[in-house]
Image 1: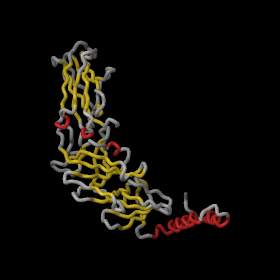
Image 2: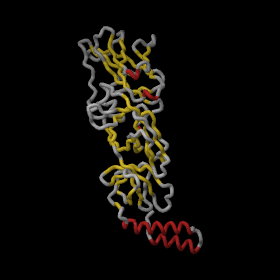
Image 3: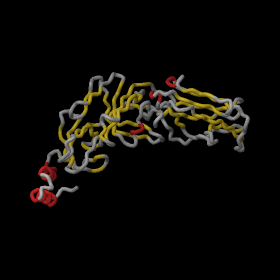
Image 4: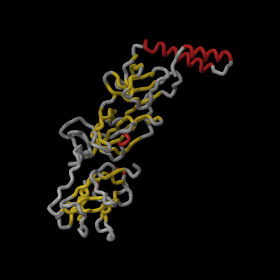
Length: 353
């Protein structure tokens, strides 16, 4: 609803004539109108500020913490918890919204000190500005100083906008929190708080992360990406002079990309297919399966077989949230090693994801 003097006069006259409009509503609208007329007079007025990449008017003023600012939206304009604000050549996240929004919305923004690189379900690398808290002392956020984050010297906490990209930042996912060095530090997300800094569908995720080890052949420290999904197209296995081995589903459809396996789910079937050089399926070939696991997954991933399906193996992962985000490989060859080797990458995911 736009603010104009004619509407104010209408509701004011309605209050005087019939009482159907309350005095409070009339007074609030008068205050909104005054604020709108004087909004741009403030020395802290900014009309080139972006909210979630869209230009919007704000008054942004000093706060007692140099990494935070008070922010006030133009009357009847929106400011949500978790909004990304572009001002002063920096990115800021809205960490607090005053619940009294009768006249205007005001809150606290905090400066982002890190841009988190990560991948979701594709090779695209996301760059998400965030607030990294790395102190061993209690750290408070918001205006009321009532939200306390306490960390050890091997932990980090992240406040990051909840959106379509960050919803993939779940417990078990590994991320780099560091600058480019010879050995940048990687962390595993151990807890995701989707309540404390949320207001309805808007807000911030609070990620608690524990320092862990880089996994060779899975992580790309030079890109600061853990569990790297390659941008290169999947290369089909090179057939031998006899034929080719492939891993398929139970409908004999060959897998060509990474497969997701949920923790605690029923055993996942994989089918061995062997094809001759003409592409015809060859039966009565004994498959040979091999799991390649990191230390974290040893004794956590099980492979099994059933006599009635000799060309299948069955994979299951323990029901442990800490395993989410890890990767392992399933290798297939034939018992005589004549059809070459097929390698399928498997990613451990949430049971409810």
